[in-house]
Length: 253
Image (cartoon, rainbow, N blue to C red; front, side, top):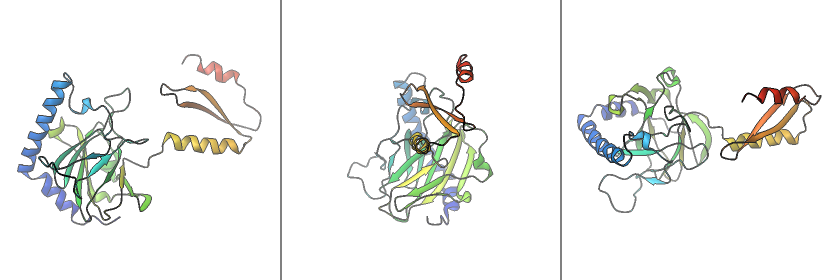
């Protein structure tokens, strides 16, 4: 990946621009008003229903065919999470992540792709609705990125990552990072950390099962609400494990 030189000054100039802040607040306010009207007392990020699906983000008022640099966001894949994208200007975007299933107050994970980029295009992505007050992003951790031609995950330079509390977004915690795209034909993927999907886990467990290891036992306890397999792994000596204690321990659940 290219080095993101001058991204710090770019970020500071952008976030310190009062005209940008005023215009962004007006656009954000109008959008939130519409969402609240349609969804009762829910806030804007609480109304997120599904992931963005090949969403092209163009400047307001633009109605022609998408041009290079009009970014296309997608999170409709396994472990993907991105519910909404707000255009701020040509090089800054506010991103809203969806909450965890059955826990609307917990918002941490993100994983999405970006394509239709312009070579040397510099951007700032603001993940604006984090729920954690403490984050390793404050201690030097940074998001990971890969692209079509470079499929190995790499961490972004920590100097280009900022984690702070923002009064413009209900005082939610915001993580901003700067990035410079360098290959127009690549699809770029950004994530909170290295993804490990359910499918990858199932493939790994199946490969272990095929080895018939004498000390590993795999059992199916049942299916999840979404009909996914729930596994119980027993790692022990080479004798078959006793099922009596296992059944007893599951009784209170």
